[in-house]
Length: 453
Image (cartoon, rainbow, N blue to C red; front, side, top):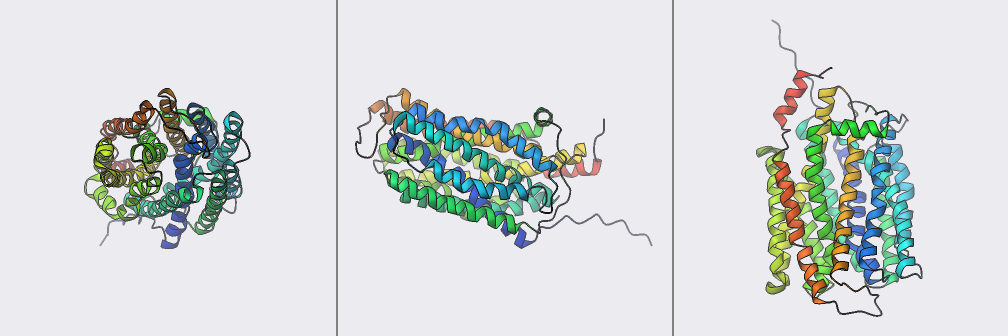
């Protein structure tokens, strides 16, 4: 009797590797959170930097990401070492990022324009160091397993640590920073130590990660952009992710202003932030279930809709009070948790689908461009908010000379941190409808094999 051939089993990632990979997300979550939450406010309300200049300082170093991130992706695709292709770059990031991060918040005796120049230079170096770690880190899931739902399970561990990292950094960093330069200096050192421990733990924790295939590098940065443009599914996913991160970037940068000028309580920055990120720790299993029940596209649409509804409802916080505001923020947080997890899971699917269709492994190509775009648009949120505040008459200050803000500026804070993020999330929902990669299409691509010619 002849039995049909049994298809090869999907590679299962060991639990120890899942944890080792996941703990590295504390670094990515912390780095995304603390500057996004505090850097703009630090410059305008501690270093007396004008709001529009502070927005430029936050944004300009991120433009460098458009070049350094694809370069790191290309180089890590080509790297051959006893540590693998990705992990040497992660180690380089571990040795550089904590130092540059601490320097960014070192608070030398500078204010105004001279302080802006100092912060811009340090933040430029920080963005470079972060690229060394983040680009190869995000490329790893697509190279560990070729199973559609195994990647979601792997990324569930990542998102659990993302939630932990955001919860700790977003809750603790503002408390350490306080309202003066000494507090911010201490915060920079403490968070720098957290970054170091997370990156080293991930480097050693992924030492035994399975590798289903080695990536194939494109010959140039221009070829990387061409490869990305040729993949329609990737471009749609990149577009919807950019809209989501632009929205989240505005909301995160606006949180201290919303707490201070809408709720009248600067300390509410911490509780508002915990409301946004807290759901990351407890809603991952439901989001995994929803992604299996309604596919990732349906779950993504639901997550985006929850975020949008919550931000629109926040408009009435000034009338209905802080408790109401926190309930709205919790709804925002549930949506935020969903699209954060789904973004990275869908990116891994796109990378695998591209490999099945083209016969090439180009994880570094896509994650390099993805990470660059993500960080740029996230920082662009702070830039837009800074310009909006500057245009409406927001007055910069330092802790020793607090000032009363004009009504136009406080109105801009309210609507800029609520309706503007909601509008951008609506754009992302429209783009979700154009995303067509499902588990069935991925299976079909695997059965068809590479399309030559």
